Image (tube, rainbow, N blue to C red):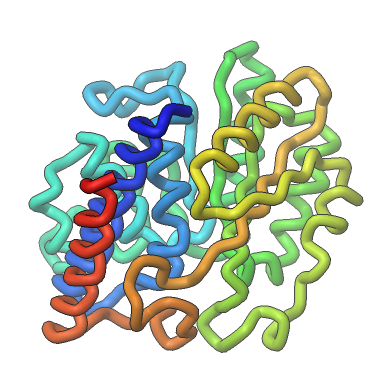
Length: 283
């Protein structure tokens, strides 16, 4: 990846984070912390990795993405808007009673959303089914799904891993946002899922660990995913992230899992992101 490409991805990720703040501020509700931690991955998936067409959201041969941690819909909506699936100007209507941007993704209302999600654990199972369906039909379709580390406490997650390995779904890429925090506190205290890598390896998955804020490492991880096709092993990308990344007062703070910024906090957060943009633009 060239330095110019990395710079553009980084600038796009800033815009995605701005959309997350704008939408949760407009809703006076939502989940900014985990949306911000995954913003770089959302950006890479939708602007570099996946085969999609914003002008034809239901294109039959597109790659699929399932947001298994459906509460981070503000992050998904923001990247979809930036990618051109719907107007960026609609983001502040999040959770409003007459808005199509509901608190969790709705595939019947939002262009670009491939599955309605919210109940933790279920999205990854649907993604596995999509990958199995693509295999059955002989389609060259990749399926990507994003899980939270708190979500790993759900038994259905591990059933999906077992299913994926049994059916040799090497077209499935499960991405774990390992930010260490969930709504009730640190994941290691609420329900310790460590060692995550060894657990997925035991299910016969191809496991890759990366810094979830490093685009070069994302590129290398997805190159491994594609090189792994034909092995019969599903891929798991464990991305180590910082909850609230990019907004100084939210970073690493569990209280921002499911709380919206007020007017003053919104202004502070947008100023943080403006400073990141300004630093990038002079590079």
